Image (cartoon, rainbow, N blue to C red; front, side):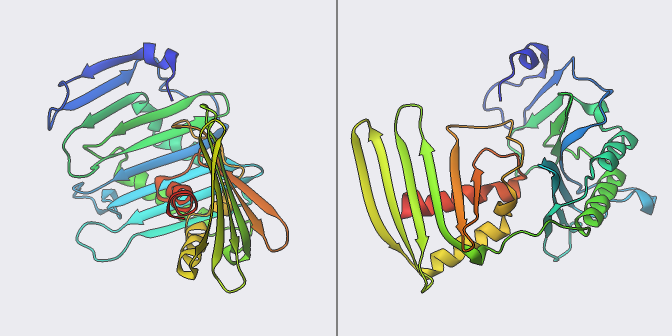
Length: 308
């Protein structure tokens, strides 16, 4: 999201020019605070690769090749997500877990941020073009006061092995705590999608799940004012099953009370899940979410608006 004040405070440290493979574009927000006054954290997001880091001290070695941790206030609850990847050379798959927790973990997270001095790197962003993958990561932490810690580097790790290890351990322990139960995706009876565009156009669809496991998708789209195109198509059982799995895999029933993402493109879209007991859960495509989960909305939208 463009912030005029932040843009004025940002200086370019390195600019190799456009399309320079291997060139590094680096900036720094000179007014980004390195000391955070607030202790009321509302969002924590830290992702880093750790490959190549070595130390003669085993206690300083990374136990993971990759760590991604996310925490956000969700009403009176907290949404937590953790993804870890084994150190390079291991054949073990990634470990991914998330939960809507009754416990507020932000006081402990705030302390962890201060212990590891994460605010020291605030405002620094570096991107090297042409890399085959992101060898670093990013940190984005928000406070109720409006203060923020934000830095990134795609060439080298943004967290020390000790910090990454402790963050991963903290999230794993927290996710094992008391959870807020979420409905089963098998309880879905209907999904309603809606998008209203600024140009006056719209797209709406209702996917009704049938008793035999199939579905019926009814769609209405308007690209030119006064011209509405409607259709009704069957949806096979395999697709319905895949949609349910997407809802469960991406934790979409926990999205409702998550904060809005700072980085949004296009118009807001909504999706409402109607459950067998009559309850409805409405989510949008502009929620703050870890990248591993955020694609769930588009995946279902694609089935309802494009494929069917």
